[in-house]
Structure formats: C-alpha cells, structure tokens
Image (tube, rainbow, N blue to C red; front, side):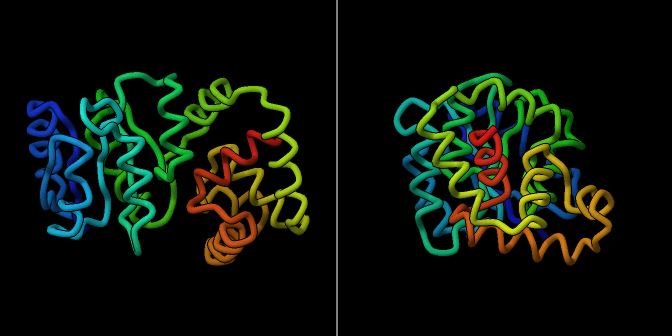
Length: 212
C-alpha cells in the first residue's frame, strides 16, 4: 500500500481527492490537513509515503511547506497540486524538493499513476510538462554557468542519462534509448543524485534545463 497525505485548504478538493483515491486498491489516504503549517505534525502522525500538496494556501504555502518537509530525515515524496500549468510557483516548488506536479483537473487514473511513479522513485514530469517548465526557467546567466559546471562532473554516459531525464523520459524509456537495463538506468540515476547534489530526478531535469 502507498500511504498518501492530502494537504489543501479547500475541503471540497480534499474530499474529492479522497473519494477518487478510494477507488485505487494500492493507495491508502491516511490523513489530511488544510494548511502548510500542519504538514510536519501530520507527517509525524500518519507516516505517509507521498504527500499531495496544494501550492496556494493562506497561512503557509505549499512551497515553504515542501521545503520544511524535505529538510526532515527520511521525508515522504511530495507532488504539488496547482490550477495553473504555467505557474512560476510550480517551478519554485520543484526547486524546493517536490518530485513533480499535477493539475487539479488531472484525470483520476493519471493522478494514481503519478503517485505510483513518485513512490517508485520516478518523477511525474512528462515531456509535455518538461516543455512548459523550460518556458518558466529564467535566462539567468549565473545559474546557467553554475549548472553547466555541475554537469561537467558527470561521465559521458551519466550525462546522456541526465539529458534524457531532462527530457522527461522514464527509466524504461532511457533504457530503451541507451540499450541498458532498467536496473542499470536506476543505478545511473542514483549516482546522478549524489554527484549533482540534488534530491530527485526532477531536480536533475531542472539542472539540465538551466544549463541549456
């Protein structure tokens, strides 16, 4: 079972998500809270594997809540929820450590798949989402040079894997393109996280986009 915590200031949204996820036998909604301030306590109480986190909340928004949560020992993965698919706040949330984002009107089967992917260690960035994120990344010369310097620490094969992660490819897609097993791809991704000093594959993708 994948244990999920809902964080949203709209009770109707939480109710809708809970009802929708109740139809997925592999997912258990273990708790909910209506503001970012309650996230740490809720995580301590319910021990979720994945947190569905609204970005826009009145007292403590989802970005700061994600940053606080990801700073804790062995934190759950975070998927941020938004009503906007081209929102600068989404990019900030991903930089804060979220493993991906979903639109609130995403079809239920896709939400379930996103939770499963994040729980399995893969982000929720599809190629289409990645293209939108590229448009959000500011042309910051300093950030670009920093990203390029960090990527130069990678081997040629690691850079190939990183570039495909940046395109939103899954481990299976990367393995198919580079003629590697999924297990080998996972090993490369794990090394990328260590060498690039990032938390998840979404941040690898952002680093690749910064460097482009």
